[in-house]
Amino acid sequence: MTTTKHRSLLDGLDEFVAEQLQTWKGVGAAVAVIHKNEVIWQKGYGYRDLESKLEVTPSTLFAIGSSTKAFTATTAALLVDQELLNWDTPVKAYMDDFKMFDPVATERLTIRDMLCHRSGLPRHEMVWYNSSRTREELVDSIQYLEPNEDFRNKWQYQNLMYMTAGYLVGNLKETTWENFVQDRLFEPLGMKSSLFSVEEMQLQPDFSVPYMEKDGENVRIPYRNIDAIGPAGSMNSNLEDMIAWLRLQLNQGQHDGQQLVSKEQMEVLHSPQMPCDSPFHGPEMPVSTYGLGWFIEPYRGHQLIHHGGAIDGFSSQVAFLPEEEIGIVVLCNTHGSIIPYTITFNIMDRLLEKEPVDWSQKMAKLMSGEESAESAVTDTPETLDPAATPVVDNEEEQTEDAKAVSLDRPVLTYAGIYQHAGYGEMSIQLKDDGLQAIFQNIEMPMEYSGNDTFSVLLVLFGLKVTFTFQVDQENNARSISIPFLMEPGTKPIEFIKKSAE
Image (tube, rainbow, N blue to C red; front, top):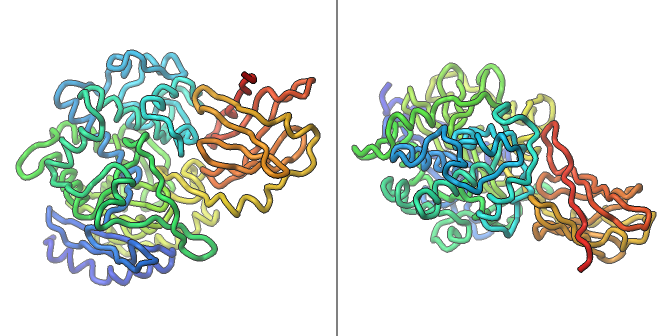
């Protein structure tokens, strides 16, 4: 089929995107489509800055979240090409001091295991979310994080493992992951606008502002700096640069006649490594697998390779159909939005000349709980993207129901600093007539519910969790037990009270 015909199949896409922005209360979106190396669609929609009425353009930068992961996997492939790294050599051979909680995983874990999410670790997101620790400190903390599955037993999405993979790549090249991506991917591909930090993005002439829906209105929210865990999701890019990235995928590692990554290693990245969960499971996508930095699924009988991303106020989807030589990228500046998915799937239906599936309706049912998906809990309740990190506006919403009721013990019983070797420190402090927890610089009011337990809003998931204090006969709190993890088979995280100096 000719590229001209493909372009004509997208007639009406403008109206569809506008409808999706209205239906799902999206602020802005950028959409690009390529076919056989030719750009057949490249447009901005809505606003990059709602208050100033600045429109999205093809140059507008967005945080792409976990669509970063494919870049990290590709840097590992570059080192495999250089024979500095082997997919199946234990990481410990390259990093002497690397440790996991499980001694078997310590000795056997490879970069392939890290990049296809089979380390045995649950998400442990609160270790890094809003943390001030460095990447090196976060890598060191992994040894204290308990697995909930046997090593290599199950696919479990894991951001800390991707961070560690990028850290390893930087170490092997005696530089940083960021510098290596810049030198070996951004520069050769001409990705001149792409950056690694939202702080740097805000210094550029054309960047988008993050929003989330609150009470039916789109509200501007703070940018989330995740530089420390960068290889898992800190990149910012635009349509122009992501088109170059899609071309590299569709051309099997070749760019402008130069083989940047060998075909052999590109095939490894694009090949199934583990069966995985998918919120889209159904007749259109009956089976899901994960490669290295990519989800690999059949879409209505055609091979689809894709990865989404989401971080506070942004969502993205990067997808390609290798046999049809079609690539799609959708970027959005609305928190937890499914717009990148509904647009991507609609474009695929059009280009494959299939009767369009009403993905908007299907996802509305899924999000309302009418349809169940095995991964819905682990993917977080606010979005269908396993890569997502939701945000909660934790000021006024928490305070109304966070007033302390009468305690069974003196309030000072619970106050103090509590510590977990992997998670760091949590402070329980007096505030007004009650208590609040401060963790990773996030304030969380505590509501007493009896028997040394408090109900606390867990900011990461927008869920209330129970803090259970262990108190001795002398009225001294010894520890707090907190169910931070959502995956099956996980234990509560226990923070031990530090003794007074």
